[in-house]
Image 1 (tube, rainbow, N blue to C red):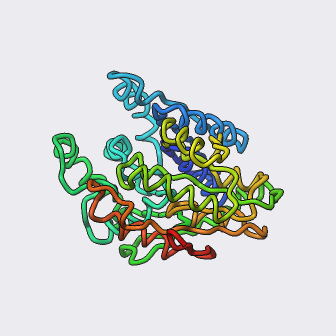
Image 2: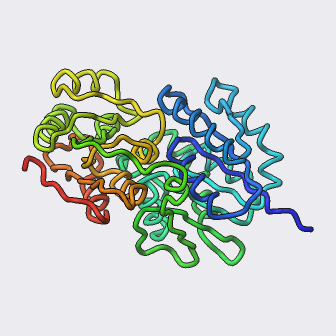
Image 3: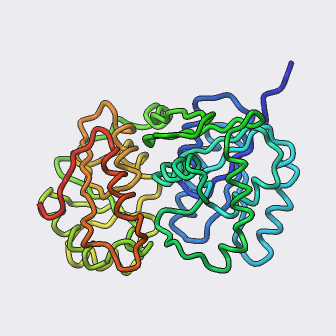
Length: 344
């Protein structure tokens, strides 16, 4: 009897691991998950919880302190080389990651799958179709010495991620996909695993607001952002603020002081938090992944998702020229959400 294909997956964030679990729910594979652990405590904590869930689903999970010192990358890559050479399929969550791009270069797997890393998946597909370099949307066009050093590796990764007669490439996504390159297989993620394992949630009479790291990435001015949160909280009876795992402690303290909102640091991705409940009858968000994923995860409930556009006046002077168009696209392509106009 032929054994199941061997699949090796690399994840670096809790959301990537959640979407990997969703993908695994749709297929039968001998799957080993490698967690390339980040350094920030919030991400590590959520990843630990997600790793427990993955093991509970019968997956093999290997935790790598991939960034724990100068020697860590060499030790990680050396230890993973036998697995890379033996894998029939590689699954990744972040095609923009230099770490992942290097591991792809060392793999001989013919089949590749990209599971969602949020809205970045939309940008990845667009850049792949246009045969452009893989660059995150919030990065400005100017490239530094490290970008130039890693440019050949990024180019090689883009070639590996381009479908061909020799290589099958799949994208497993809940994001809207338009103008995908020829040969790319797009499989819809409808959060069937999440809905089968959690909920339905108890729904409160108030609203919850989802935070964003747009301030931390230099896209949105902090003062403007706090003013917008204050206005939304007052208008929509918001009582809780679900912080993004990358939001700074200083900003969250200021938000609590100026708005009185309860600041919640989720220990799991928000799709699972919302599905477990309790959750507000309305979930308010700025343009982000959750305006696409929460309506799917909360299918069959009475919870509605509302999205507030980013006013161009909120953008910083250093924001990427692509920022406004990309954020508008995230909102404009969202299904089953209510659109909110800033300041109204």
